[in-house]
Amino acid sequence: MNKVLIDTCCWIDFFRSKNGELGDLVSMLIESNRAVITGVIITELLQGCKTDKEQKQLDQLFSTIDSLSVIDEDWKSTGVALQNLRTQGKTVPVTDGLIATVAQRNKVSVLTIDNHFKYLQIVQYPIKNA
Image (cartoon, rainbow, N blue to C red; front, side, top):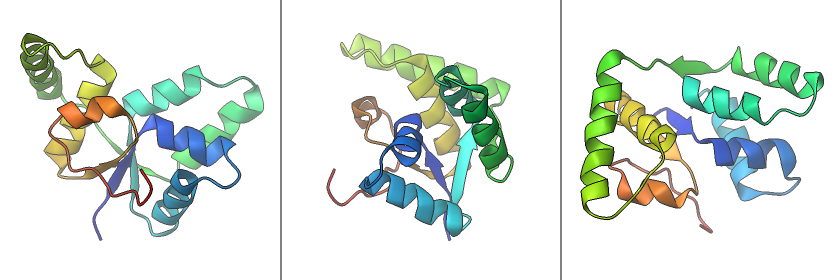
């Protein structure tokens, strides 16, 4: 039963879409205790909150999901990986690079539809209609 790091875009689908496949996958991963998160994703989601109620809902949900820590070495690994991509003409946000580094170190797949991750060395959790 492998854990899956759920990217911000998938959480947004989970919270906002009534019939999205991504939201259904997130629900399944939560119910099977396979969903994990990391601090940068929590930050991105909280940044997008429009009400105190939304923030409380996020706080409650994330208190039940395992969080993968960022360690000092992750910052260096992320910087090197992003610099290597930049020399190839590819610019990837630091947040996505850090998410990928944390996933790699913890040997978990990533559920995402963000195109930046195609440049990063991650195992992407399969999405049928992506």
